[in-house]
Image (cartoon, rainbow, N blue to C red; front, side, top):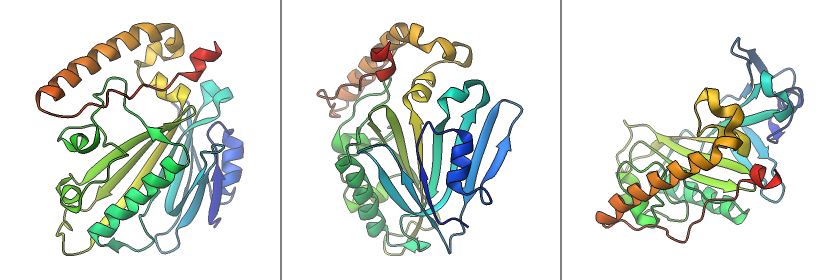
Length: 256
């Protein structure tokens, strides 16, 4: 089995299958018009994944699986979504504080490579410790929780980043049966990467996605109103808002 793969959003399904290794890649073609390409590694012999994105490229070790999705009705866009599952380290169990430090180190490597904090356009821009507030969609990638704060998180948490038209969701999942802070825990990481086109289409219902660019001004106004209401509520609870944060420019609209 191919142990190292190199992938890039926008590559064709055929090129993606080659990158995964023709003999190893699993290809599933669904009647709905989506092609899924995937490779799985055993936990005892994990893979390594390079995500190519210019100066923002990075590696993930201890990879367990990679999946890419291609829409047969939009083949020109290629594979526009990746899902990667990986371990924090190759071992099954890891002390909780080491897990915390390893996840923070990964976030720092991503930010050093130019990936920036991102908030959904409908979401409040909760900053630092305030992003730990229960019910928050994603944590502030720039903030390092204390060990006590880390253990107080739910059994899953996520962070959102973006870089030059690519959107990244990083998630941590841990075994609820192994939450004793003095004993090792079991962690699994997952990452979803999407093209800007795929990310923006997600703000619309299915029938409107083809025309998302024309509909964007109306959707943006609704998003701004929703964010303002959520931030007003958050501020009333004493939570800190990142008022300096600005949503990234939508490159597809600038090109048009």
